[in-house]
Image (cartoon, rainbow over all chains, first blue to last red; front, side, top):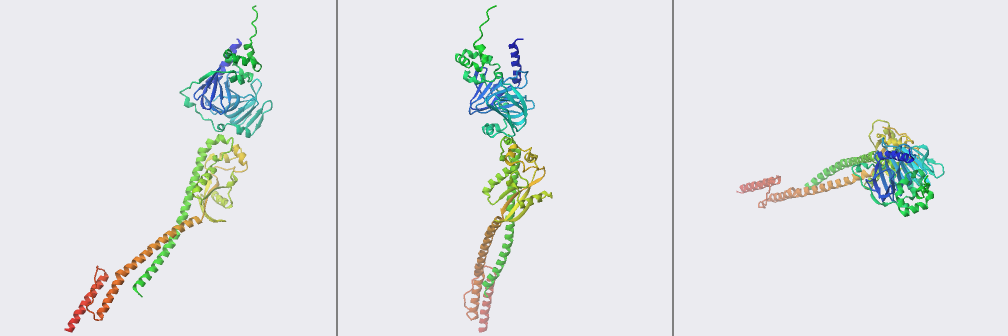
Length: 282
Length: 290
């Protein structure tokens, strides 16, 4: 069985999980950017989301995405998140949200809801039933468990979650890069001050309004290197599938040139940009 | 003594006596009514405060439950809502004061003073008393108060008042974990107390009394005057005139003018009788002379 076939299966199966949990953007404030495959689109209320979609809010900005199982996620200002397959590459289990930067609230109260995993560059968590508020960037991660019990751990250099510990409702954990996690009984004042105000309320369920209609996302062009450079430089397991996803952009000389200039941070492109010379015919 | 003086004397005695009795009775009734009106207003205000409490715990607090995980919002507290409601009401009715005096409150501002604690303990004795009305001396004067028990009838109240562990952490951050816990369902934990200076009903009653008595005196004076005018015009003057005519006839002036008789009242009857008597006298004298 070839590697590509296995990769296809590994990609396909978990995507079925997300396809089952497919949802829609149910609310937006400010400009919402959607990156689907290698295309830039404008996100709007009623647009369906798919596995692999990158959703980015502006500053100021706010968006709600609701899945068919009743799970709702809210994105705060300047937040960048990808709806990815399970990055552990295992058989379909938990859908995964990859939070590159920003604020995310995950609310899941339905008994039928799937477990959701959220990974930021520093911290990872898994939640089935309950709500959490997550803040993450390249240097730190913070999680406040509003309700339910979450498993919270670190994100390793490969982008995989590990060392998960149970964190109960009302508890707060903060984790700076390369330092141990700190658990506190209450969120810090800094966290509370920076958190989007709308996160302090329960997220509304609005999917019903879009049950019978889907809005087509408006394409605005192909992604440039700057649009996706931070994703291209993310943890290796987060970049799974990017070769295939952005291969078509190599036709753009600027994109190719910039990709090549930063090859050290995404070495997997080396073989694509500079394929080894073909072996001499035997 | 002249008839008019006798008449006025009698009328004055009756009038003063009547005024005194009316004054006394009306004063008592007005005082009682003013006090009852004040108390009824207080009951309505208290019922409004209870309605605000119920609305807050059933409709507002559930909406703020998530926010309470982050910061304590007093707007989610029934007692706060009731106090704020009354604060607004006081802008129109500044004489009324309201307190939810509690034996073991979360906010120590609501702790019952000694006299309030006595009232609350009275309610806690379980004799089914629904309200207590009383007076008490204060540095600014005598106060009338109306008190009703605050009884925990809604289990939702216990989400913040059962144990510190069950209460929102943001509430513990703000008020600590020592006060306002250990409440039980159906327990009387405090009392709604509306106070008002007793001067207020007394003044209200006095103002109404002054108006009433003033009106009574004015009406009395008018009747007094009217009766005097009637007495003079209908009785005294005609009688004086008849007396004058009788004097003249008695002195031999048989040709005095006739007394004009109007109407059919007693004076007219007297005048007719006098006229007949004069005619008979003239006739009798003529018969004697012939």
